[in-house]
Image (cartoon, rainbow, N blue to C red; front, side, top):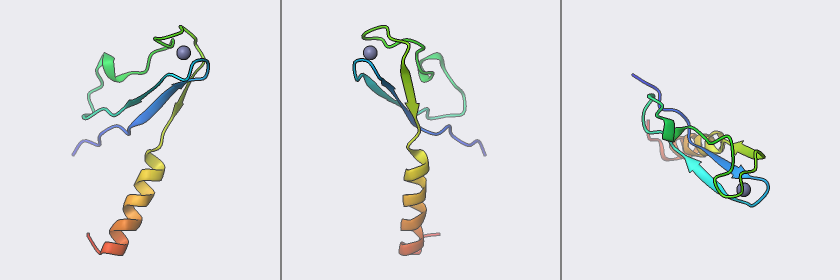
Length: 69
Ligand SMILES: [Zn+2]
């Protein structure tokens, strides 16, 4: 069973541009990859942040509370 890639966000430290990437399969397409330059201001100062760790922990906590699984 393939493990889907974790969603993550890319943020531009210069202009605040932000985009969340959430690949739906383990096959990465070019549009699933973050850009190396900000599409708005062309700044290379892009910061990628994964929020899936937090989401996963919340999800698992909920599962435990609800007794699902
Ligand atoms: Zn920018």
